Image (cartoon, rainbow over all chains, first blue to last red; front, top):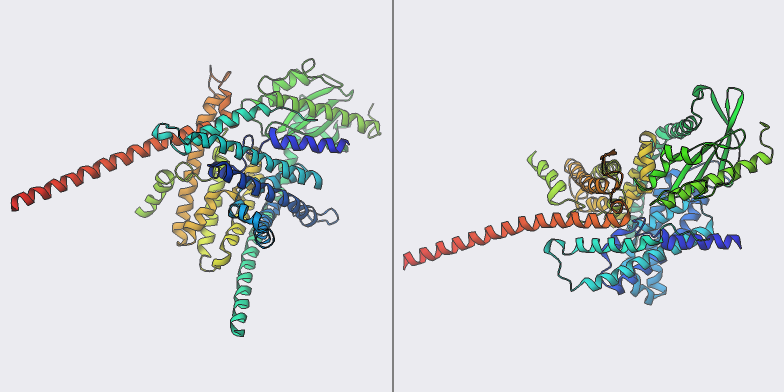
Length: 200
Length: 192
Length: 224
C-alpha cells in the first residue's frame, strides 16, 4: 500500500509539479512547433505519450540487463546516451511499421508525428531521468507515462491558447514566434502554482 | 531476377557493414576518452567529498582528518570521522529532491549526534532563489548545534521564495539523522 | 579566406541558429539562468558540432544514403558522450550544474540540421568553419539571453552582485516563465531589426526601379 502511494505521488509530481515543458523545458521544439491547432497538438501529444511509455520500459531493461547488469562485473553506464538514442530511434521506426501493418486507424492518426519524435528531447530525457532517479521497473513505466501525459496536457492547453490568438493583431515585430513564446511564458506562470506541492 | 535479388542482399550487407564500421570507430573514440578520464572523474568525486568534510569540520587539522564508511541506510551513506585516532563525529551523505533536480547534501554530526554543520555539495536550483539554501551562513545559523528531528518554522527558517528548496534540505537533514541513528543502533562503531 | 569570414558572419548574425532559424529551443530556455552556464553549454555544443561536422564531412562519400540519419545519430551521440566524459573530468562543477542538458545535446536540432544540410555536402575545411560559425552563433544567443535573465532575475553579472538591486531582484526572470518571455522579447527585437533592414532594401529597390522606369520613359520621349 505504501508502495502504491509512493508511485501515485511520483506520477502526480511528474504530471504537474515537474511538468516536462513548464518546469523542465524538455520537448520545447514540438511544443512550440506543433501547437497551432488543438487537434494536431492532441495527435502529437498522444504519439509522444505512446513512445515515451514504451521507451521507458525498453530503456530500463536495456540499462539494467545490458549496460549495468547486477550479476556481471562490468559497468557500461557511460554508454547510456548512445544506447538510449539508438534504442529510441529503432523503437520509433518499429512502432511506425507495426502500426502501419496492424492498427492502420491509429497509424493514420499518429503516423505523421512519429518520425519527429526521435529528436524530441522529452523521450531521451525521460529515459535518462529514470536512470538518474534510480526507479524500479514499475516506477519507471509510471513515470514515463505520467510525464508524457503532462507534455500532452501542456501542448493541448497551449494549442487552445494559440487558436485564440489567431485573429490578434500584435505589433509587426512580435508577430509569429515572439508572441507564441510570451503566451507560453504566461502559461508557465500559471503552471508554476503547482511548484512546491507535495503529494503523499 | 535471381541476380537482382542477390544484388539487393549484397548491397544491404554492405550498408550494414559500413554502419557497423562507423559504430566501431565511434565506440573506439568513446572508450579511449573514457579510459583517459575515468581516474580523474573518480578523483573529482573524492576531492569534492574531502572538501565538504573539511568545510564542515572547520578548525580541525585537515590533513589528519580521516573517515571510514560504517554503513548505509535509506539511500544515505554514513561515515565515522576521526582526527588522528580520536572520534570527532560522523558525516552522512544523502540526496534529496529539490526544485530543479537532486540536491546532494553532506551533514556532519558531533559524537553526541548533534549537528556540526551542513554543506550542500551540489545542486541545480535556481540561482538567486533556491541557491540561497546553499548559503553557508544560512546553513550555519539554522542547523549547527541542533539535534533530533527538526521542524520547519520553529527550528529551521524556510526561505521566502525558495520554500521548496529549503524544505528539501530540511527533509534531507532529518532523513540523514534517522539513518545515522539507525546504523549506530545496529552497532556500527562503539564511539560513545 | 573571405568566404570563411562570410560564413562566420552568417552563423553569428544573419542566419543565427537560435535567434533566426529558431532551432534548439530546449537548451536555450533551460541553461540560460546564468552567463557561466550559458557559455559552458554553448561551448560544449560548439565542440560537438565541430567534431561531428568534420567527421561526417570526411565520411560523406562512405556513409550509405539509406541509413545516413542513423549514422549521424551514432556519430553525434558518440561525440556528445566524449564531451560529457571530458567535462566531468576537467570541468566538474560546470558538469554538475548543467546536469542532464549535456547528454541532451544529442537531440539538439542544430547539430543534426548542420550535418544534413551542410557537412554531408561539403569538404572538411568549410564544414569545420560552419561548425565554428553555428556553434558560436548558438553560444552568442545563449549569452544574450543569459545576460538579461541573470541581470534582471538574480541581480548579478558573471556572478558579481549589483549593489542595491541584487537584494531584491525580479525573480520571475530566472524562473521558467521568465525564460519564455525573455526569449520572446529578444526574438522580437531581432525581428524588428531584420524588418527594418528588409524595409530599407525594399525601399531602395523600389527607388531604383522608379529611376530606371523614368529613365526609359525619358529615352522614349527623346526618341519620339
